Length: 235
Ligand code: UTP
Image 1 (tube, helix red, strand yellow):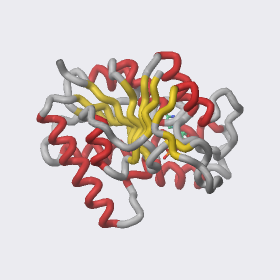
Image 2 (cartoon, rainbow, N blue to C red; image 1 turned 180 degrees about the vertical axis):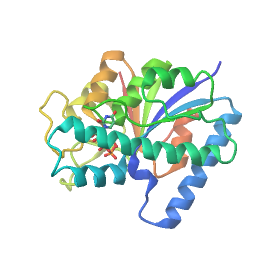
Image 3 (cartoon, protein in one colour; image 1 turned 45 degrees about the vertical axis):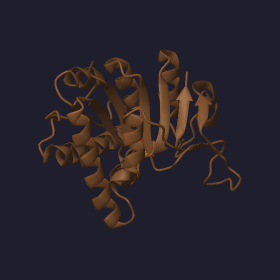
Image 4 (cartoon, rainbow, N blue to C red; image 1 turned 135 degrees about the vertical axis):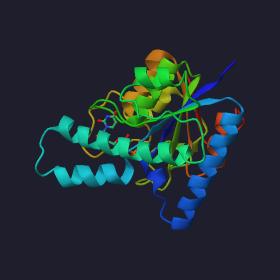
């Protein structure tokens, strides 16, 4: 049976600080994709906005008061990054859908025809983490993999708490608590996983995991069902 996996690829991963890191990251990603294609695995990749999203939103913010309008600018940046990943994977001849689907129904149907489907955001009000959860549900994937720029979910924000501890196993409800699910969202606040994504995963009983997407080997291990260092989130 064809296995389908869904990965949220954080936008920051496309632009590591060191150029040498970038060359290796893209090469490793291509190698992993080639291996997955050989095994017949299907992968939906939902790419985040990263630096272009932040730059574009900051540029427009003084002139655009409507939050949803700013979200539309963020969505455009996610689709730019998605197009970069799409074309980088197409170049060596991998079977990647030739379009960036604008919604998860279309992406799920394209996964029936191609080994890889790459997309960005969909509609205002959430991030690409939530899109990845929606796609995982619609594509019938067993879990949603969040590949980001931290190695684990921590019990508190490690940027502001020196004593934050990494957690290797959590339930969705515990993750929701850490990400601020149910609390009013503060402007500029960024949780390790978008609380909307956690809410949708809880509703659908969808397992998740969080891993360091800077290390493609960890993503490969998760996609191939091997043990990996990161946080496993069970229902
Ligand atoms: P990201 O998914 O990159 O969110 O979308 P983020 O949390 O800012 O990025 P990382 O994970 O920390 O790198 C960028 C922005 O695009 C809009 C939101 O404004 C989001 O903050 N967006 C994205 C949407 O409104 N809807 C979507 O489906 C996706």
